[in-house]
Length: 195
Image (tube, rainbow, N blue to C red):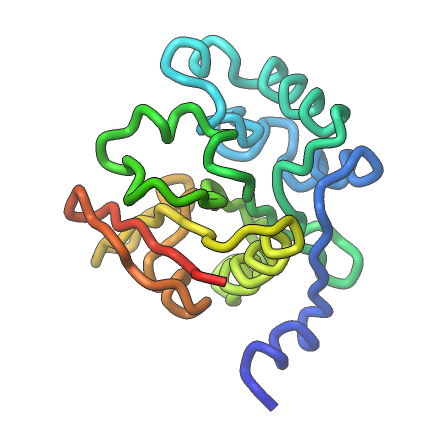
């Protein structure tokens, strides 16, 4: 039996697209403060002042509007029926902040789905859930016809606090089968999984 299989069984992990039906679980996972600094996973969807002026409840309402419009912005991970993790995954075009990033500029003109963010409940961190979220995100994107799934992790030797690795770590992407395809800054590689 493989190690990944054991993790899924050991933690009774399952993954579900964020829909209106699961909105309360998303709120439960993100807590009163909306994960990191009231972002509600809107960091990549809003640029500059638009983001800084809309953290907290405004960001929560914006994300809820996305979900209410029947758009799936990502997946929730559950352990024994309880929400323990989140991964944001959508077509790159849904993330305006990426379009204006010099460090994370497009590698080429191919259509890609982007993984922009993770959030794992504190007591479930460092158990491999991020790697399983990555695999689930690839499977989800594949269902919608994606050929390439891309991510923008942090690659650093020092141990960063969780709020600073919300885009994931290079090691997690490697474990999930992604390959580095570009690096425009020392600690910010671009990883891809080709389906």
